[in-house]
Length: 226
Ligand SMILES: [Zn+2]
Image 1 (cartoon, rainbow, N blue to C red):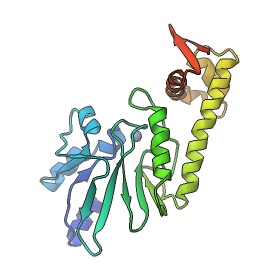
Image 2: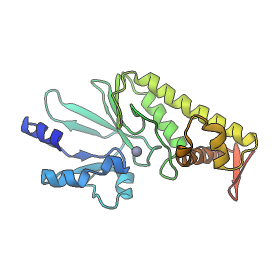
Image 3: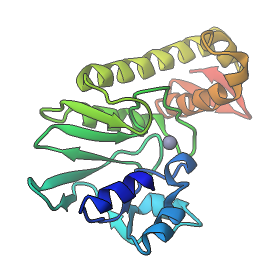
Image 4: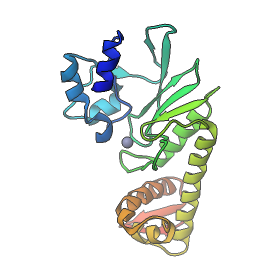
């Protein structure tokens, strides 16, 4: 709020509140900010709007739509619907400076959890590849942590990290692991036991994709290789 007030007192105008996705740490302040400002339009993708019960979205964002912010120079933000972390996740690309607001798809600090059914590994990988294909990308601003100054390298790391995890999970299944818990203890050796419940969610997301790909089968909660 303080930052917004500083902008307003510096003579800037407020266009609205744009949501990258529906997770509580990204929408928790929306209603109080709206109240603080008197009125403000909330922008989000339709899948984000559909998943929020206590926040009303005024304007739906579509893939490839451009939001213009007046000023000198005009800032044009291109909306990219990039599901995977959340169904309605959007990134915003500012072409002139090559700046990508990457939301929670790529973050400067911590790691990104893909938690099904909101999260989907296949969609996530597609989204990362789409971000990777952007021309003249020079900077990424994630939803957490500092700015990312080497975006292509970071995106490559993210993509290969997911594919490595997937390969290890498949290997664990081929080696006889039959439950997400067993897979976590074999694959997430770098993760503290406290984080195992979260790791199980991530494993489930990978298992979903592996089953879709026809690499494993899941029957009555028993996982087996194919
Ligand atoms: Zn999130």
